[in-house]
Image 1: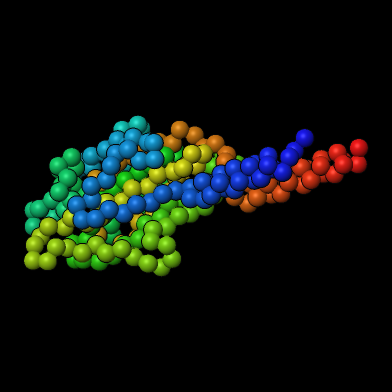
Image 2: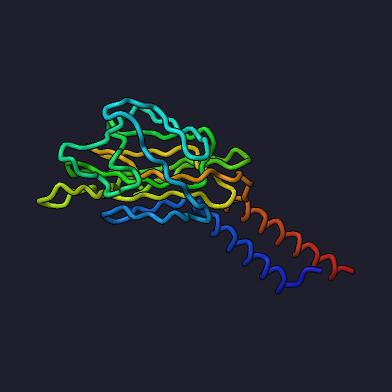
Length: 232
């Protein structure tokens, strides 16, 4: 028999669970220097070293786990910049970056990602926004953007120097979600210091709306049970 105390406790638990799944993808933007942790949301990312001929045009790269990530439009491998300095101060990438021809690039992994991080920088100053699309095993989809709305975060050079530290960006999926694409929209820029982790699987998690309906249904059943007991 449902008691008022049990019903209240159940509803509180369900509403708390609803708030816990509200943000399927977390996107963090770090300060100058771009130091991003390699453990993101329970995933441990693995570095990808950009290699190739300076000026070579490519449309994909393959991570250490064999996951091919397409890039559209094509990008250019840059092993040095006009000053000979390292854009990101990241020895792991030996100063190599992907230079982008336009104002936007979309990264699409062959297999969904659990987490990804990268560094973006501008040689002329500028700004950027980033977003990630996600999916779960039921086919539910969505997109998360940072900053939200039409905002941008700055990609400014250090005044009076040729040191372009840029911003570090990390994205990771909540349990049951997978990242299916990443969009980067900055201005006069390049990106590198890439690190990724493949998703372990997309397990369906009830959305807040579904949990609310379930709560109402259980409440109705509880009230019906109490009414029957009174009649008996």
